[in-house]
Image (cartoon, rainbow, N blue to C red; front, side):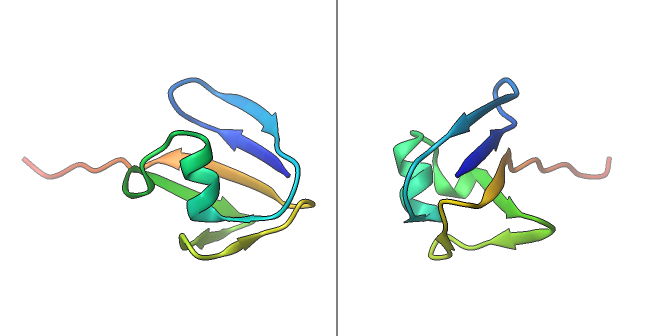
Length: 67
């Protein structure tokens, strides 16, 4: 699968095989609560199955607030 990482720098990696989102984040050393995983225009949960043919984007969660 093609993984587009958006943090800390933008990079693209290829990963072979199927796995769940939570497994992928653990393999990448990322905390699941701190990242969003997106396939197409859909946000995926940690238990979503990823296929070898998928292209996904991994983005950090960003929060802000009003003053």
